[in-house]
Image: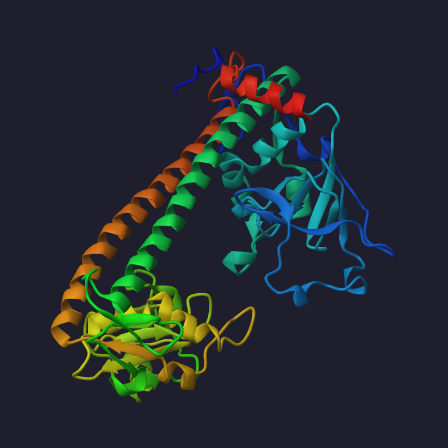
Length: 452
């Protein structure tokens, strides 16, 4: 859908804003926002809050409850009230600010501001987080490290804020709340599709490597609880008996070289049968020799993550002599009884994952002991059958990956659409004064109000 432009524009006098509607005003931040000096003293107020570049201010979620600060440690933390603008001046290049819907507290690195009562809070939320404004903030950021560039208090106080009429603020806020909610619903739908596709892919892998491809084959009890029944002619062994070598990575952190010729495989670089070299770290020849002193990674070897969020993921090495193990990684060299691809897919199955999960140690960085991994139960069909199953899974996985890639691409396009729409509306590149929510949205809102 296209939207009209305003009938007349003027030069804003601000390079990164360019032209704005002729009747809109500009005021410095200091005249519209008043910093709150409230800090926690004796009593903790609300939950710990944080800022998301996509969602704005939200309640902070802890993977490990032990990382929550005690009441005494929260002394001096800044108090946030609903409808205040909360700003992390070290994350403004990542849209590290927003109007809070919550009462709570934030790190002393944040600041909270009361917003002028004549301003629509939702308009301010969208304006201050827009792509146009983020580009404006970056011109004032200073510092040494890219992830901690900061905007000074003086620069923030002098920062220009666009002011349409209150009627237009209300119209823009309503338009963006509706449209961003609609886009967010589409994003959620695509992300759920991705998760369902991943679950389906895992189910296909797990079934193929433990039951085979013939639905009529006679079955027998494997004697292993998490394997269940397997084809009667298959054998059950352990990983250490179907590999020539199992090599753990060197445990010292390498010195990386962005211009190096050798690639380091980390857990972040693989996902269930897929090895992605695009973001791999690099090493020079000296560091590569240190990392491969136990064994050189050869084509057809299997790399396996044994720690972190992606423990249990395995992939094949596509080429000899240019890859080496990063931290948390292991190398398996299959014996003659195993087809490398079949063993790799089996290591990616839920059945093997369950074997490792009973021995997982650590909450924030889970890992599995090498001794447990060496003793994984592995099924062993005939080599010819392994090859057939591996080829089937290669084709199925490729099909699933294409569907997942398509869904992820749709999400990226929706993100871009959302960002562009917000910037266009809050800077007056489009005129939404005549916009009305679709009739079905009005009916839905009335029904929700009646239910309340």
